[in-house]
Length: 229
Image 1: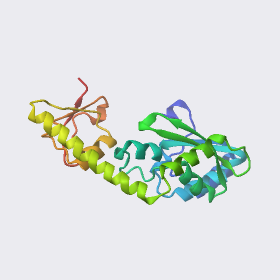
Image 2: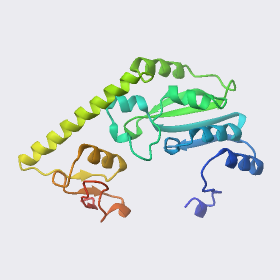
Image 3: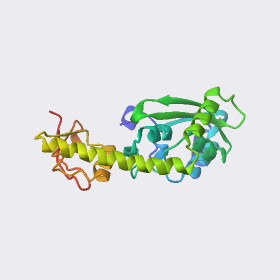
Image 4: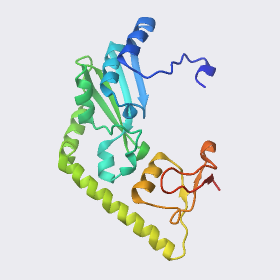
């Protein structure tokens, strides 16, 4: 679709080697932008090194992804599935990209996906660091995002949420009520499989996406996906 609109588009995995090719052909970049992509890439250090190669000395790299702090606070275990290799925090972004000469210079919370964060990085020392960055560092340390026990408690919270959801659905069915799914998403697949929800509890899912209609959901549920009524 991008090519049909005349946009110069390259479909390849982003690596240091690709960054070198792009710089050789087009020069360095003023800005690199990404939304809900970086958390899908296992080799984060190759990406970070490639970004460092691509940027001009005063360039910026801006990306946003689901935010770890919101996931922990809301017990949003539906963020955890195969494509989400990483769930980032400001502390982890700073640590990972800092190894490649990039500095976190700004952050901006987003409402998408139940809570995301936009990170702005630049070559170290090239731009002033927003006060919002230090504020977020302190908030994350206070929340315990740098401590193992926080994630042990998160596991317990996930287990409690799972039992509560199963109890609710079972109770509704016992009362003669029916529950349908709305939106056949990766996140809903995580919830259904983790909670052991079968088609006896949720007989079908509705979705407006044509390519999902007439299919079945992955895993143990295997209920049909229908057109939105």
